[in-house]
Image (tube, rainbow, N blue to C red; front, side, top):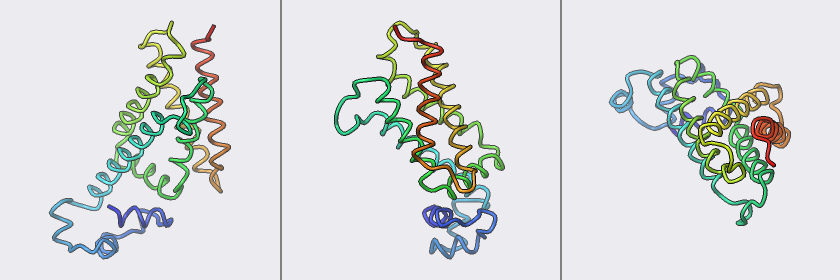
Length: 189
């Protein structure tokens, strides 16, 4: 999987990465490959699953991590921190991220990706709940899922521009979307 990841990060298009080239780069034999995967498509599916898990696990850890070792003293600071982490995670390797997203659609893995995004939304819910004590968990869950979906849309917009949108500007869009939606749905008193 690391060989495929390296090729995607270098900007290779998935359709141009042949099975022979992948096996050669990984330093494994054809028989070894077929012990684990029945085709290149099954390998790509496993790769996408692994990348999605890694990405969302890293984002959850980042959301839980206090900024500069200090506790976030405001909702705005917390959201700023999360938005920056999300933008950086997706835009750090735009060629790989585009290849993964394109493959998700082609292989019909959107449901898996949505479940991972919902898992991230659950973490967001836990992190922002203290700022909204009067709002039910169910209401916050809906809000955080919408926020995660909207943030994903903003990331996709930046990712598919030529050149990709800058991390800082995309982070600001995600931050502003999140804060505006939270305020609209659950105005704090």
